[in-house]
Image (tube, rainbow, N blue to C red):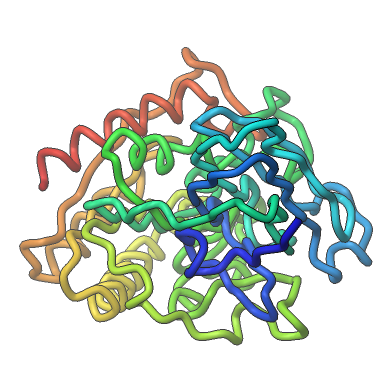
Length: 348
């Protein structure tokens, strides 16, 4: 048997992953890797980061999925420093496409992929890059939070998150695109979610956009937010921004702050454009609410960029059910992904 580290030489990396000391770190929602495997036996070694493991809170542990030829063969919360999963075990060599996806978001934990262990004659190679690349920037809706839970009163748990059921992943699959998700539950532009009208300055997303992200966990003692992100690693053709839902929880208490939200949205658009000079930018909203939409339209108009447009999702009304804490159900996320894919086809 031989042990192969999963990095850019052996796998296509998905999202803002980090490779250090031959360990692949799956950070944000949807991060992962994809490779073709030809051989008789494949075992993956996966674990939870030491910070989260020592914290011991199961609700914060990372959740992953492993797909073999598009079929999920592993889907579970990782609770140990290292767990091993046999993905292929055959008497004769076989060829398969393997994809590993982190289903939960990056704030609370990081999944670590230690190795791909194979038989001596096996070959692992990155899958080809797809012709279209899309980056999604958002909040819990983009993370797919609550989609695997129908209890509207549940406490937050990474176990309820499933990035593969989010509208973002659905749209990318429908469009045959490689993707990257930069999303955090509760985050906004001028305020994170609040239920009492007090401004939530802790959960502000733009401050982390030019880093690998934000996490209470670390990578070899270094926080994600202290690691700059090289935007050339993933140059998107399309960027979809879906922010404003959490800001609205603050702005409804203070109507005058909608203008502040508009100004900050414009500043963030300028940052996104500077980091991605060639991308089409789609400013979207509407899956849960629509009140900030006029201010988003104003910000897009003020930017004066003809490669920026605004898209409104169909708003959930309960007909397709709800997930945790009134978040979109799997059916609502599916509908939103289909709507967005059709819109992007038209824009392209």
